[in-house]
Length: 80
Image (cartoon, rainbow, N blue to C red; front, side):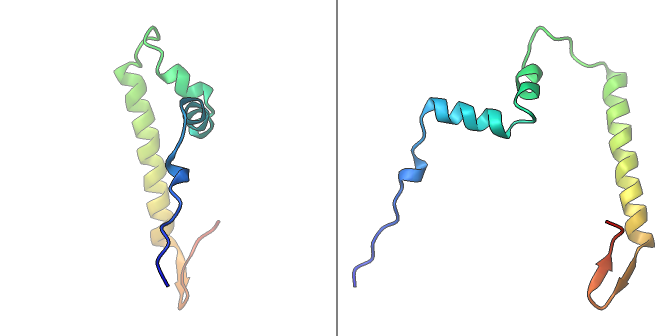
């Protein structure tokens, strides 16, 4: 029995479909457009540092929860 190649039609996409897909998958669509606004002032170093500090604190809390967590033969058990 001869092999039949898979249909490659899923690879074809037009510009409008691509733009719609990008907008749908972007963080709310609107946020992605705003992040590309060149007239908008860049965030200050203090703002960036605050965001990074918050993310680091969140990570530290998750690591602490994991280390203090319980487990059994099935694996780790989390609060969530």
